Amino acid sequence: MVVLILSLICSLFIAIFAVQNASLVTINLFWFTKQVPLVLVILGSTFAGALIMLLLAIWRELRLKLRPKQKQKDEILNNELVGQSVTPTLKQSDDSN
Image (cartoon, rainbow, N blue to C red):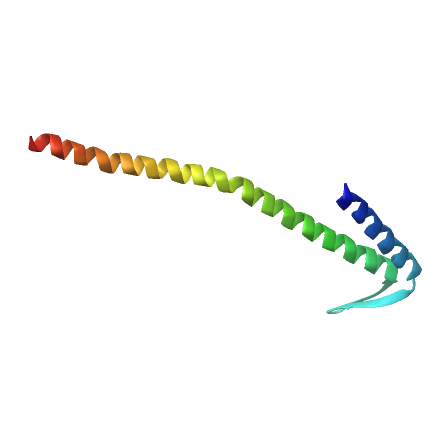
């Protein structure tokens, strides 16, 4: 709940800052030159940063969820390998008698 309130307050400050800076600015990217309102640059940059953070958070959650499944697969594989290595040893000891 605290994170939600802080996020809303931060969003409000960004919106106020963006609206107060509505003058035109020139954007240059390689050969592309365009004059756009500064409010669009500020809000676009904020949105892009939030989107990047969201994607990183989703990637982290997926990685953490997949880690236990991978551990289970590794344990099953190790148990199968241990079971196979123990079986021939037991057979060899039975054959020697």
